[in-house]
Each structure stands twice: as C-alpha cells, then as structure tokens.
Image 1 (cartoon, helix red, strand yellow):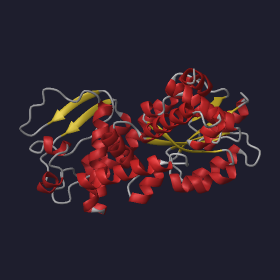
Image 2 (tube, rainbow, N blue to C red):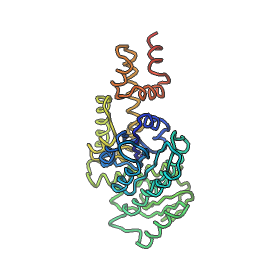
Image 3 (cartoon, rainbow, N blue to C red):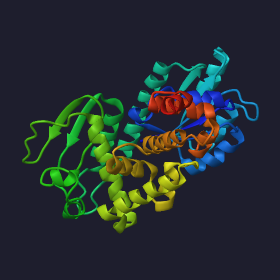
Length: 349
C-alpha cells in the first residue's frame, strides 16, 4: 500500500479529496493531511509518503516553494499540484520543478484515478528495481553483473514480463516453509516482473499457468521480500505468533482510542515495522485495510451513541474522532446509508 499525503489550506478541499475515490482499492492510503503548509516538512519526515498532493496557492507558504523543500528532503517523491487557476505559467513552473501532475479545482475523479494508476506503475517498477538489486543469494549468486545491468535495462524500457527461475538456497527453504518461495522451492528464486507478456527460463520445471494477475503476485512478492528483510532485523518478529500479537495489540488500541487521531505509521514506528509491510500484515490478518477497519469501528460506535439518544450530533462526531461534523456526516452516510440525523429519526420513532 503506497502512502499519500494531502496539503491544502482550505479544509473543505481536503475533505473532498478524502472521499473522492476509494484510495485503498487503487493501492493507496492517506497517511496524513495538513492545512498549515509550514508544518508539512516535519510531518513528511515522520510519515515518509510516496505521493504528496498540494495546493499551489497557499497563504502561509507558496506551494511551489514547498515543493522545492520537499524535493530537497526526498528527491524521488511524487508531487501533484492543485490549483484554482487554469493558467499555463503555473503548470509550466510545476513541470519545471518536477511535478507529475497539475489539477485544476474541483479535481475530476477519473483524472485523478488515471494519474494515480500511472504513478503506481512507476512505484511498482521502482520497488522491483530495488528488489532485483537487493534480494540476491549471498551463498549462491545466480545473476552476473552484466546480466543484472541488462535486466535493469529491460525492466525500464520493455513492455514484456519475464520470470527467471533457479533453485533456492537451503537458507530460504528453511526461512519460508509456508510462503511463496517454498511453493516452488525446487524450481526458482529469482523473479522479475514488468508489464504484459510472460517468458520463462526454467530448470526442470513445467509451468502450465503463470499467475492470475501480475498485481496479485506482486503483493505476495512484496510481502515475502519485506518479511525477509524484517526477519533479518529481528528474527522473532517474523513468526506467526509475533505477528498476530502485534495485530491484536493494534486492534485493542483502536478499540480504546478510536476517538483520537490514529495512523498506521504510528504503529509501524511503535513495533518497528515498515508501514507498507504492516499494512499488508494487517489486511492479511484482519481482512481489510487499516483505515477501513478504523472507519468502520468508529461508525459502529457512532451508531450506538446515536441510538442511545444522549448526545447531540456534534458530540457524537467528537466522540468518535471527528472534530468536523461535516466530515463525520459525509463518512457516516457513506457507511450507513443515511445521514446521522436521518438515522437518529429512524431509530427513535
């Protein structure tokens, strides 16, 4: 799950962006948002988002200047600009700085989805480049330097998908007996993926069917890779028991503190996991993404408060973690099917 951070000094714009699309379905999560641009850099250091969407015109700090500061902090981050003005010189400056997209307000849903999908492909390729360079056997180096360079070149410029297969080391057999590597332990370890076609170079292996979709396999591959990295940092943390304990602790904390600001990055830092890895573990164990679970739990509590009839709607909103009643009402209606007031009338008849 890639992380997106939103910046606009108009809170109404942020609220609209939060519910404009299903971020999780596209492979993204909102890791944070900010109306004060002077606070952004400190939060970016903590949250480490992959994409920042920011307004080009803000009172306290110009969006173009903020983008320059962000690129100085992290030069591979993806930035989209928002603007109320459809002016060529603004768009030109945004492109010169390195922005990947320029949207005029109000932002169109399909335009945003199209650009996000393109960015996700770019992020996936970057992940695989990193995987190719780092996930190599130390006891049996199976890819030569020349081949590695050639593969990198092919990944960047080819429309093909190809998988190279060799036997895994006994180290990985023992490490992942229940994971994807064990499934093919006699067949392959090196896997490189790009886009459309599939070619196989195998060792005593007949593969009748590849994988249903590249994206599904990529999720499993990322989980395997990150699990490996995590286990090297702390071998005990990769066990099933340890993972379930962490997930249960997160769920307990949500149940006790759902009225506070909660981010997956907080728990990732607390338990020393990467955010993307913890996101996959959470969904794998709970059945839905972190933010979806949090919102559902909050809305269930809101329903109980409304049914009790002892609070005003604003008090209900505050009690489940929303300082802004408008935002709460919109999310409640999306989840329940009725606005809070209509729901109250239905239940109190």
